[in-house]
Image (tube, rainbow, N blue to C red; front, side, top):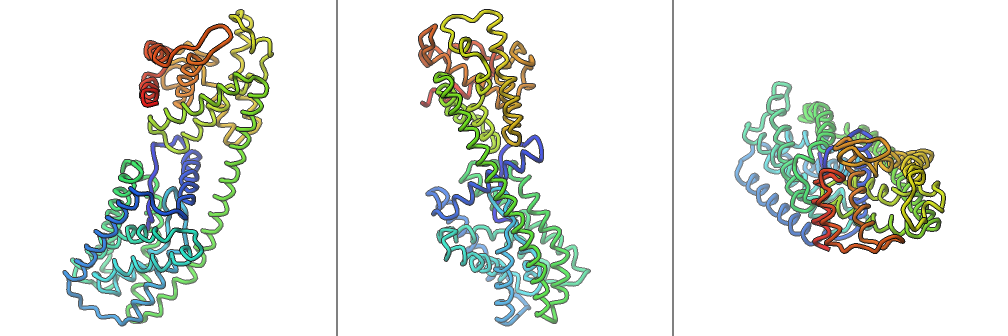
Length: 449
C-alpha cells in the first residue's frame, strides 16, 4: 500500500531515478516534524473528510452477514498498525506491508467496516512517531487521507456478496486488488497534484514499485485469510514475516542514510571548490555564485525533477572550475585574447571535467555536464561541437544563464548591459547559440524579478 508517491519527469537511468528518490525522501523527512503547509492542510483535510463520509456511506449502505466479535476487530487493527510501522521509503511516499493484513480484513470483516479499520490502524501505527515528535500530530490527517485504497477494495467485496476466502474467489480478489490500486492512485495523485503541482503521469513510476510490493504480498495474505476463517489466531502468522520485512526496511533506511550523507559530502565539496575558484579569481567566483541562482530559477521554470535541479545547481557552481588550471595572465587579461590564448581558455571545460571525474560519484556526473556548458545549439560550440538536444539540458540552461549574467556584469573590457538589452540579445541568439525553450524560460524568470 502506498502512503503517497510522486515524481517529476523521466530519469535517464536507474541511477538517476534512485538519486531522485533520495532527494524526495530527504525532503519528506524534513517536512514530517512540521505542521502541514496551508494549502496541504486544506487539501488533505478535504480528502480525509470525503474519505470518512464515503466510508460511513459504505458501512450504512450495505448490510453484512458477517458478525465478528470485537476481539477480531481489535486484532486486525493492531496487526495493521504493526505492519504500517515497517516502512520502505520511496520518494515522497512509502511502501508498507499492510497488504498482509488488509486482505484478511476484506474477507473476515464486514466490507463496510474495512475502510474505517484501515484508517484506525494507520493512526495507531503512527502514535509512536507523534509521541517522539518525529511527525507532527497534524499529519494524522495524512494517515486518514492515505486510506482511500480501502474504499475501492471494500466496495468490490460488498458488491460481490461477501464471498468466503476460497481459491474459487480469486476473480473477486483480482477485481478488489484492481480497485485498491485505482482508488490509491486517485487519492494520492489528486493530493500530490493539488499540493505539489505534480502531474498524475509522473507518479506512475514511483507507485508502480509500491504496487509491486502489494501484488507480491497479496497471494500470501489471501492464504492467511483462508486459514484464519475458522482460526483467527492464524493471523499471528504474519508476525514473523513482518519482522523480517522490518529488518530489510531498516537495512534500506541505512543505505538511504549513507547515500544522503554522501550527497551532502559531494555538495560540501562543490561549495569548497567554489570557494577555491573565488579565492583564485574573484570575478569567476562571484560570477559562478550569481549564475547558480539564475540556473535554479530557470530549472524550476522548465519543470526539472529534483535530481536534475540538484545537478543544475552543482553544474552552475562548478562550470568554471577548470579555470583554476588556466594561467592567471589569460584569465585576468583586460583586453581581447589572442587566438592562442583563446585556445588555452577553451580547455577549461575539459579540465573541469577531469578534475571532477577524479572526485567521482555525483561530481563525476556533474563533470560531464560541465564539459558541455559552452556548446552551442547550432553545433558551433566547444569542446565537442554538440548540437541541439545532443547537449544535455542542464548544460543548455547553464550556458544561457552564464551568458546572460556575463552580459549584465561589468568586465575589464566593457561595461555591463541592462537586463532588457541582455534579454533582447538572448532572444536574437535563440535557435543559434541558445536553446529557444531555455531562452523563453530565462525571459520569464527575468521578467518576474
